[in-house]
Image (tube, rainbow, N blue to C red; front, side, top):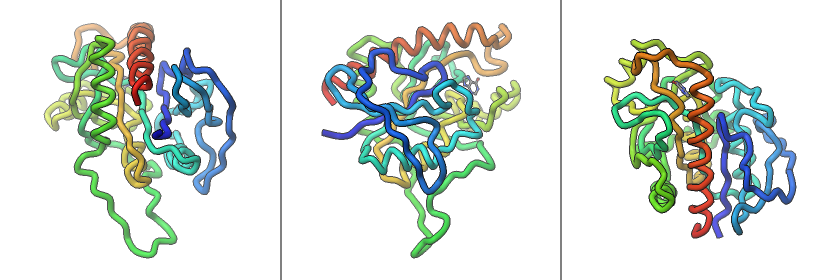
Length: 246
Ligand code: HPA
């Protein structure tokens, strides 16, 4: 059976229905992961859970040690990773509460440790990143989402911004013109590091708010929290379903 990990995002620092079996401290050549790796049973399937922002949600997006997180998962034999992420919605159908399984990425981040292929190389190494996400895992997420009747969008381009601030209205306008449907702060370099490590990686994004300038209402943290609560309960149902036949 494929060994599966879930990287939790804002609003999903824990999996409510995960029966924890043990926790594993991990040290990597790239430093410490965001938290201990939590091993557990979800439904009847073994999974490993790692909260991206740390156990108490204190690590901002640009400070997440993405290299250590992905390396630690690979090192313990993980083959597939579901990345849960909170995002802002840009295009028409991407309203708050929507669950999006993106199929493309545009990377606007900078200054992050973004590759494992840096030192001690036999030769310069490039990865094919034409399709940034693992299609079989995307399909499994979509099927599970349909089965639990989640408010699902089955494709979209994820614009990865630096954070931790939200964007200006004009930045979002530019992202939209570039072709982005959703915007988040953690999608990169997580996806490309997963690819470098040959992990099957897909994203399940929860729209927390309309992105800057896309609604007449100001973006409020209270509204974001409320939308995430609903969205994350949908994600929980979706992932539980996926694990039933993964
Ligand atoms: N922008 C970037 N990241 C986000 C947003 C947003 O509007 N909402 C949740 N994560």
